[in-house]
Amino acid sequence: MTAYDAIIIGTGQAGPPLARRFAGAGMKIAVIERARYGGTCVNIGCTPTKTMVASAYAAHLARRGADYGFSAGEITVDMKRVKARKDYVVGLSNRAVERSVKSLKNGHAYEGHARFASPREVQVGTETLNADRIFINVGARAAVPAIPGLDQVDYLTNSSMMNVDFLPDHLLILGGSYIGLEFGQMYRRFGSAVTIVEIGPRLIAREDEDVSEGIAGFLAKEGVDVRLNAKCLRVRTEGRNIVMTIDCGGTSEVRGSHLLVATGRRPNTDDLGLDRAGIKQDARGYIIVDDELRTSAAGVWALGDCNGRGAFTHTSWNDYQIVAANLLDGEHRRLSDRIPAYALYTDPPLGRVGMTVAEVRKGGRRALVGKIGMEKVSRAFEKGETEGFMQIVVDADTKQILGASFLGAGGDEVIHCVLDVMYAKAPYTVLERAMHIHPTVAEFVPLILDDLAPISEPASAAGE
Image (cartoon, rainbow, N blue to C red; front, side):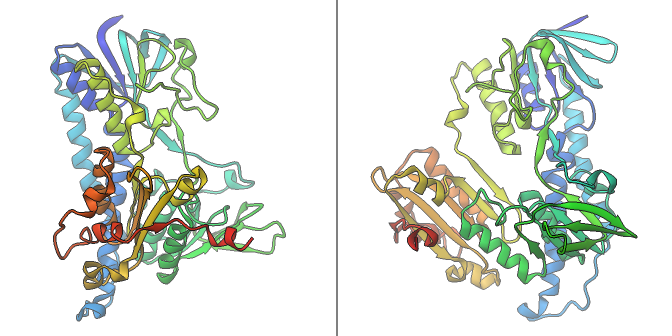
């Protein structure tokens, strides 16, 4: 048995920086990685997909040359070169993480699968490691639903999509949320026919209805076929095609050459031996943590996607910050201080922070809302990118910003204007009175706040 001051299982966004902090404090560290250094974000998540989104955007913009006064001729996409570019970018990040872990002073990297032998012991291959502090950072993987026939079909997930170096003739996507929408628009721009099948009544149901409608609208303009309210799903192969039955009568079917299953994620916690350490999980397999990311087992923390408290790269990084600050800096940082924020990288992107309008209505508080269409934003109009809108919700009594949805050009960046004011707990009037630079998208944020009105009831409720 080899003794360490701390063991870190997994090298996703939270693991390596935590290892560096501990090693820098003179602690003896073990870092365990069973597959690819860098975890989901670097290898099959943010880094590769946003690299591919950039390629798709370039192809789309070139096809729109006439809108800007030029012609690039016929635009074709070489998927092998797209994949090569993606692999190059991923390789740089992956190798950088591996170097940082393997060069740690006072650190040792183990490559293999980790399992708990007890609350203080972890087995890797034939070796047993011991530490008083253990940190689980094992991430998540694609969740595959129990749909009749799916186990007989050669389907893709967000992970296996990274190996695709060809253009699917017709890509079927099961799931109308973040992963499915990004891949759907991306491959439509590469040149595939794309059909997105969603069991719910609208896309990305967690967002406000106008966001769902806006995204469905610009996808439709690009030729993406969206099928909602899919019931009694069944899948089968028919020759070289994959056929999805999407209603109970069996008369409505969609046919494609390939199928991407994008129906959510599940934590990589099945085979860690958590029961041997007394680590509790919820019904979906996520490790239960308290406000400081401690598990039910003393001396064990869970960070990143496996704890179900964010499932984003930035929330994983923030988990690391919370744990490091509390253990090394004498601070008392908490998960409950975190403001929900994320982005959807369609084009245009969606930047989201805090509460939706629907959540504010449900809470019953007095609130005000301001909204502007992107066609009225001069910078967006000048760029020829006028899809979407920006919307901000504030508390009418406290003047605190409650949330915002920016669906439009630069929305994933501009949203931070709002997020930072929310963290400062400043009234919206601080942002309203700020002088922003012209011409930018962000200059319209104060204008939105200068034209607030009481939140009205949704049209469906008003008509009842």
